[in-house]
Image (tube, rainbow, N blue to C red):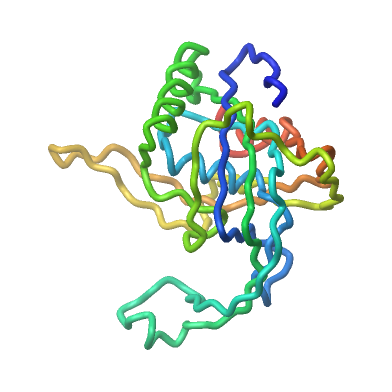
Length: 243
């Protein structure tokens, strides 16, 4: 496996993940849950946050390697069309059944760089990257990792030289979801709430937020690698008012 390129702003980490099922839902298909043929950058970031979650740490996915693209499987899944209310899910009028087209027996490599948010320097990014590596080596988790949806449990570990992407795998994906930026909006759908310290004093109000989706316009897998445009991370940070 070729070594990742050097980074001046963060530390590179290579992660291997695999599982029997995966569902990286396409937002443009609303009637059915249809998976993208490969892992999305937002799903990769969510997977890493299951291992080590910290508001000060930012994971920027550089590339996603396809070791095993897997097959497809159709399942009928129960879902809730809205947040659960007072009634149990089995009796809720918002209970729905949807057909899902999922991936089976997949394996990926995730090449990422760890950065420090809130204007902190490279030393802080190095600290978070080392913690991430240690947690991967020890098998520690913040929550159970999953591939796209919580039903699709995932195995995660540090990648070794024995794991390489399938260089014969090439695919034109097209428009692919990159992630959601949560833009401050006084009329946004997310309810504002106050944070209070241990003495009960208010620590400010969380502003309402509106999700804004960002997309990779011409996503493609070449020689087993899906390259993620890094300018989308800068755009996301600008939309959210961060550096």
